[in-house]
Length: 450
Image (cartoon, rainbow, N blue to C red; front, top):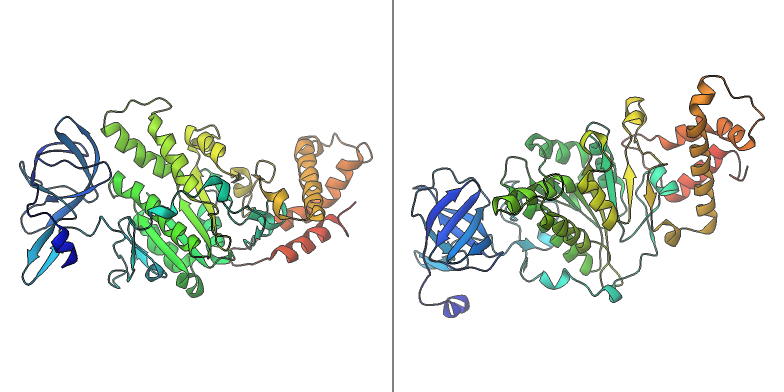
């Protein structure tokens, strides 16, 4: 009744004037950018959720979240928050304008609009996306410092590329090098209270496979899975990643340690590109308009620690490399805003080395802030031996090296078989940070100071 009293006496009614590709041109209703509207669908199908993505003169441009087949010229368009009479009660035309955020999302699978996909009814949440806006932009000077390591359960990452609570890390990989397996290991093993996973633009069949094969029953209970498959509209795909970020910030600011995994940042950029180019924005870098890179930065900056000293938000973003091209514009932009990256090597994957993390090309920029000096020296020694061996591998294979010519290379040759075994790990194996360090010392031969 309170909402009914605050509602206007009339409902502004717009008409669908033109459909161009993904864009719906509407006249007669004015909405701010980001506002939700409902377009009258084919007879018997109800209303189609859409969002205002721009305007020109008296024309409002909308983009639908769901398929728009069957739309008729002159279809009615109404703001989503307005009420209509449904027998003895009043309802909104759409629930898409207030996405659910709260404890009720734990263990659930939802789409980019917070609509349940697991046949368990709508999430029971008392907070909406609009009420969560205050969490999205913490004061930079009040953000909690990254001073504590996150145990990922991955031996190579914990020992040589230690992740801090609140860090934003990229996983750079081409197709078929074990990216999905690495994501499932992080989801299963990370020491976090809540895990938010956003599958953006993935194949539909992989959603169920990920939920049933990659998540244990214990992991499912603390996981929120937001999925926007490849067959959804670009707006739905983009909103899936953004909605997942807002859910993660909510849990972070309630004092919980949160891990967010977005797969993938590249497909999010592609969705934003489709939206921007449908609006007529010109491309500037390999087909990407300028606004795409601004949206990438905005999405990444939502992650990290907030102003609450008790909560943290650690984020992993996968970045797909086109033909293993590390200078892809999305990859290049992501490196500039992330706090490090894990580079997956196709050569390692082809040789059966999993996880295929190329330690030489990977980096964690916050590692010196979260580990002891002894740990840092041990990691530096290991990276130096790996680099020395890799630089001289061709010469060793050809038999052109004689032992004794280079003392450090001799040590690298002796240690390499043990280091190689150390860097490999089974998908279900969990190795804590202390255990990983002890195993690394043994791999280097004793105390690791040789």
